[in-house]
Image 1 (cartoon, rainbow, N blue to C red):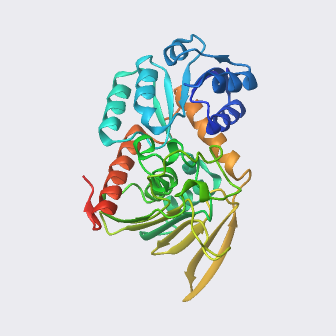
Image 2: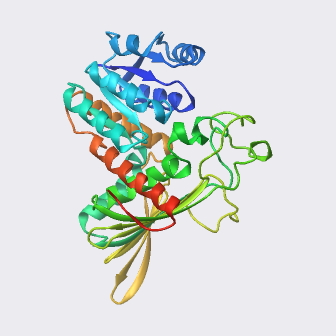
Image 3: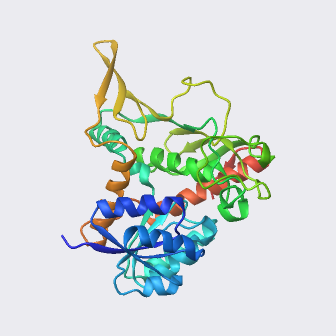
Length: 358
């Protein structure tokens, strides 16, 4: 099978994850671009690619068929529209953009383009998520009444003081960063019911003062003591959906939680079965009623499992899209719908009451 020439826009920490998964999945990294040229040269050198001098030169590169956009959120719309205007296929990192209006602009550009757009919502592609999706589609879980999704770090604020923690660049904190993955996966498993209302609560306790923060995990580099932290580091959301489904999302970059007392992952409570799984885990736990008694079961997820397996599956699906063999694993409309819900989440948190999703 012929390799697909890939361009990477944005050469921060996640760019290497994209490049590694792409290379394992039938792509060849051809060109890289970043607003910081040293980062582009570093990534390009690692993968035998060209360091483009501008975004325009990358999308015009004759060897680039598809582009992964992995820049800060405030640059998503500009970069995505440039890729689509050049009729290149696009894998766009989550969240889609800062606002619903920007999402609309990206969707319009995708409609005009000969290129296809796939959202980078990698949690859908994990083997455990795929296993549970097959359970749901088979009818084994039954109608789902409630989904609880949790992703809580004891300490893990990314890039403290940088764009991750600057609202004008990121759009928000842990909810738009981690929570959007949980929100997407819960809605995806439930068949995308329309979300009607959102009730939200946020906290911001550990990121300020920046100089006082201590953590062995520091995605995005060491803290910038003179930087900005004006976002939430913990959040709770309750989504009320058409048809009666409720979704609870519990997410935190930093929280004081004793080790082992709250498991990350998704819990689905259905009429026929209850299911819990960790997104990048190797097993799915379920409970079913059999002859009047509850029976707990553990199913092993077919290997390979974990983070790399999810990324590889996402890129294989993107490759199929580029070759014209499949539809996107996650569509532009999915990205826009998530942004509508995220907007309602932040409105609810600011107002201190439940709000409609508009």
